[in-house]
Image 1 (cartoon, protein in one colour):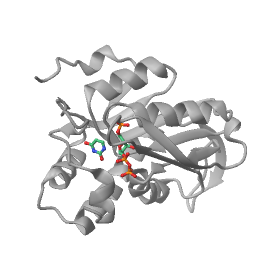
Image 2 (cartoon, rainbow, N blue to C red; image 1 turned 45 degrees about the horizontal axis):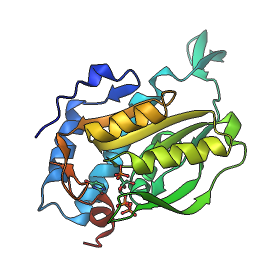
Image 3 (spheres, protein in one colour; image 1 turned 45 degrees about the vertical axis):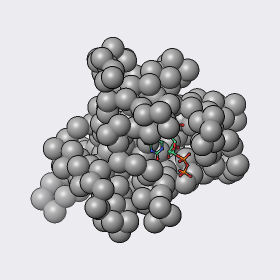
Image 4 (cartoon, rainbow, N blue to C red; image 1 turned 180 degrees about the vertical axis):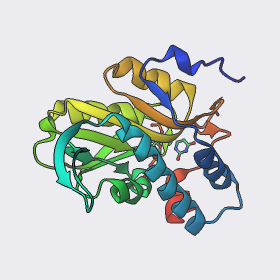
Length: 218
Ligand code: PRP
Ligand code: URA
């Protein structure tokens, strides 16, 4: 049965449902959409979401000369950033974010969901230096039970991270509630909140297995 979930009940949740994102996501969801198109659309949506996530980034005043006059203008204040995709599927969002924030450092966290228990299993971690001084964007297309995302955020905090943003494409109420409860300090950006999880822990209606669709391993 569908969950009576209200996004407004979760203070850390940001629903990025721009019409362009919804349109592209609908094409991704379709069973017949192939790997190439799926991957391209995910990258495009990641870029659009990164635009929204960076909306409140601090600016500094600068003085410049235009061809016409001297003026006061704004530039980014040079916030230190890191992007830490959760392997594998999070990799599909990396290039889209880097298109907007090309100077960001990139780390990787390897986690997979045990198919029986659905518990996250860690197999890799490589992070940029100085994560305690960076804002880390953690992309992963799917937020299902929330186990993987919550474990990744815990791992990053254990290694010193103090400012983290979780960025997912499709989410289930269960996963949002789990991450919000475990990490009330972490903003969660999602493009869609779906109905529920099925008995295998897949998001319904979802889009299937994101990693398999990105990498063609179905
Ligand atoms: C998927 C997805 C998330 C996780 C979500 O990864 O990319 O990391 O499942 O499920 P959860 O919220 O219930 O933890 P998966 O374990 O399939 O690994 P993959 O990215 O290597 O395919
Ligand atoms: N992981 C996926 O790739 N898809 C889901 O629906 C749930 C977890």
